[in-house]
Length: 101
Image (tube, rainbow, N blue to C red; front, side, top):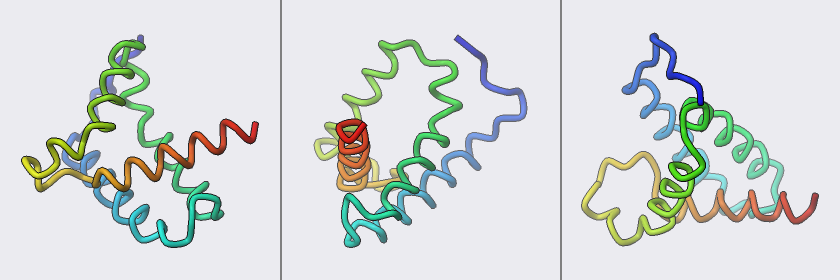
């Protein structure tokens, strides 16, 4: 397990998530198999790197479950960086990519 870099800026990181979430939401009408969806999925994975660098498999599973259930708690966190629909969309893009090989 790695460490978070000393120059990590959580506010900037959260803003990157908000920006990416907004761009994913804007691309959703283009469809799960659109080139934009694939590019945004890649960007999502890259943005996850600071977390994946330090997370155990259990932490990754817990975070995934948390966001899979986002619809249950999203109203309590109106400033979440993306919506449950955005998360479900990006997860489905990933599933399709994995299934396609």
